[in-house]
Amino acid sequence: MAEIKVMKAKDMKKVSSHQKVGKIIGLTATYLFLGIMAIIVIFPFYWMISSSLKEMDEYRRAIPTLIPKVLDFANYVEVFTSEDLLLGQLFYNTLFVGVVSTFFSLIITVLSAFAFARLEFKGKNALFALLLATMMIPGELFTITNYQTVNDFLGLATLGKALGNQLLITLGNWRNTYAVLIIPFLVSVFYIYLLRQNFLQIPNELYLAAKVDGTSDFKYLCKVMIPLALPTIISITILKMMGSWNSYMWPRLVANDEAHRLITNGLRTAFTNAEGVTDIPVQMAAVAVVSFPLFLVFIFLRKYIMKGVSRSGIKG
Image 1: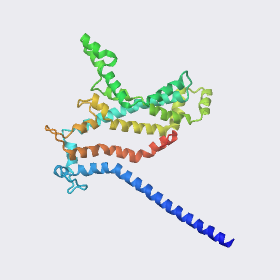
Image 2 (image 1 turned 180 degrees about the vertical axis):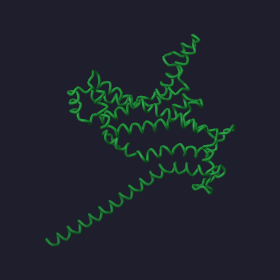
Image 3 (image 1 turned 60 degrees about the vertical axis):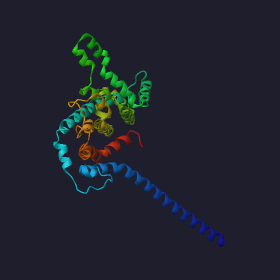
Image 4 (image 1 turned 90 degrees about the horizontal axis):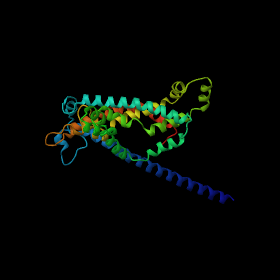
């Protein structure tokens, strides 16, 4: 019996040592994978900052340098002083479009989410399922249909051309206006779904008690549901503003004039001479300047984004 116990103890030690080795290998592989992924994600940002501090001759070298030999801050000075970029106008356009679109998008999102979460009407579930189904459609298809719509809204532009009526042409063709940058993307099914899931977590007994006391739906929404769902609403606000700030393809299609050009489109064509040669270091400096507000938003407000998403029951 003593020999059997000794053998069992040795076997347990072997199993324990194998488990420790397996655990060490697993942790090493995990950290190695996370390290590689971190490098892949961080390196483009590092290259952007490094390139923005180089002179053009150093940037054009056949063998690139990871660390600039001479830190050239003149690129950043040119970003703020160059007449080619018009940074102030681009910032104004982007902020205006972002703030206005976010404001009206929040109103639509809150009211829609409340209707699908608390109100009872015929076809509610079918309508909500139909809205969710639209999330399966690639965004490029909506871009095509929206582009055709804003070029000739309700056929007014074609009718105006036939009648020689400039007013109808203006009403039918939305290109190079703030409206074309704001209206097509006011409704987000994902944000409605996100906020609806949060509203559903609020006990329905509160709503029934409020109705017994004679509280209107709008007052209940403002006094009870919005304060309880504030983290999610803040998350939606941040994500919507960041989406407006980063939008490129749609503004590129419909707003080509300088008066309505957004910052991403302005950077695309800035610092390019008549021969088509782009001063990449200066352009990288401009990208760094434009990206800085987004970094601040993420650093100081990331907890609200995570809290709002987790309270809605969506994780990943």
